[in-house]
Length: 133
Image (cartoon, rainbow, N blue to C red; front, side, top):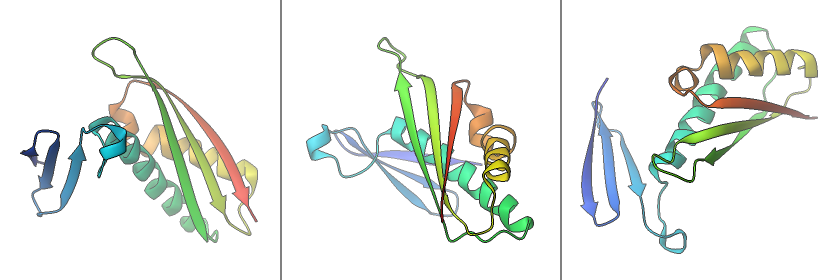
């Protein structure tokens, strides 16, 4: 697996994978931002990875998934390197037939056992679960 990141401007970069898929990276001040920062992309990658695994596990169990949202929130160190010290994932599932118990179990497995992004991070992670019916 390989990506190439190129400087586009003082605070702008573009990362491209081997298939030509592009991601914009933006380090401008919040009021000028047009894309996510690298650390925001880490949170997005974690939420995306856990989401894919969770939906696949739910569908394998013949559960209906109308919608799934994962909010990722990270707390960073004040000193450099400003890595994450704590990450919370809040899962919100819209499913008429998934139980709270199985959702929590599968969400935990998706975020801690099967998600390769989570396996790459050493931050402590919490999980919160909500089902909308």
